[in-house]
Length: 448
Image (tube, rainbow, N blue to C red; front, side, top):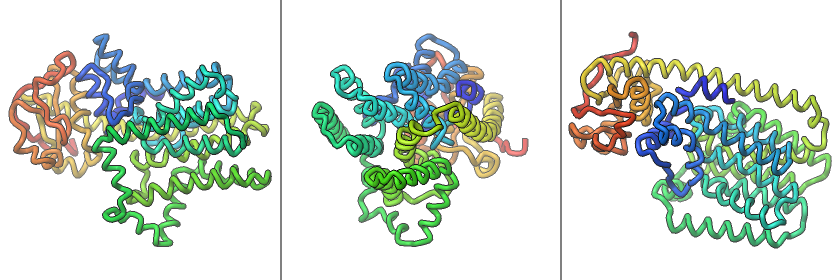
C-alpha cells in the first residue's frame, strides 16, 4: 500500500482531500471541523512537511502516505500490544474493502474511525477492558470513534451489544465507561452542532425529505440487491457465510444482531438519501459501517476456529489484498489521465499573465467533465508544485454562479472554492504566489 500511495500521490487529493491539504499547507496548522479531531491524525505527515519547509511535491507524497503510516501503527498496537493477530487481519481487510474511491481521498475521518473499531473489538475479546490502564485506552479509542463521524455510533453500539450477546455478564466498569462516553458525546454534539452536521440530521425530517418513498417500490429492492452484490460482493458473501455458520451452530442471537444492524444501516441510508446506483465516494462513506458489522463477526467467530488461520489463510489473504490493489491501480491509472489533462490546463494558464482563470465551458462538458468543486484548490496545489511563482487557480462557470461569485470577486480576491472567496494576501507566500487581477477565460483545451 505504501508503494501504491507513492505511485498515485498526485491522484490522492481529490474533493475533500484537496480542501484539507490546501488548508494545511496554506495555514501551516491542523484543519479540524465539526469536532472531528481525528482529522488532525490524517494531517500529521503533510503538516510536518510544511513546518520543515519541504517542497510541495514532497508534502503531496507525505499526504498520500499518511493513512498508510497511521494504519500501520494501529496494526502494531493490535498485534504487538494487544497480541491479537486476528485484529491485524481485520485492519488489513478494512484498508481494502469498502474503499474504492476513498483510496483516492484517504483523509476521510470515517475511514480512520472505522479502523479504530477493530481495536474496540480486540480489547473486549482479549479481556483488555478490566484494568484501569486498558479502560483508559479503550475510552480514548471509543471517544475518537464517536467524534470521527456521526454514523460510527452504529457499528460501535453493534460491537458492544455483540460482546454482551457472547458473555451475558455485566462488567460494571465497562458499563459506566460506555455510558459516560455516550453521554459526553451527545452533550458536546448537542452544544456545538455545526450547520453542516445539522443539515445531515435534517435528512431525517420526512416532511420534506421524500427519499423514503423509494422503499415503497418493489423494484427498488432488486436494484439494492444488484448494487451490493456488484460493489460489495465479498462483504455480502462473507455475511451469508457467517449467517450459515450461525444457523449451523444455532446461535440465533448473533444471527439476528448482525442482520439487524446490517440491514438497519442500509435502511437508514435509503430512508434519508436518494440512492446513486453507481458507486460514489459519498455512498462509500455512508455504507462504510457495514464493513465492521460484517467482517468482525466472521473473523472472530469463523477465522479463529477454522483452518483459515493456517498458511492457506495467509495465502488467501495475500491474494485477496493483491486483487483489491489491482482494482485500485486500474482506477488510479484512469485518474492519471485526468491529472494529465488538468496539467495541460495548468500549463496553458501559466503561459499567460495573471493567476486567475476560468475553464472554457465546452471543456467542462467534454474532456474535463470530471472537474468538480475542488478543482480550484487542486489547480492551486498542482501549479504551485511546478513553480510557486506561476501559481494559478482555475474555476468553472458553476463556481462563478454560486453565491453570485462573478460579481463578488474583485482584483484583490481569489476563489479558494465556490463557497469561500479569499483575499489574495491570505495566501501562504512560502508555497503560493497569487497575482492580483481579474479572472480570464482560457481558450478551449479539449483536442489539444
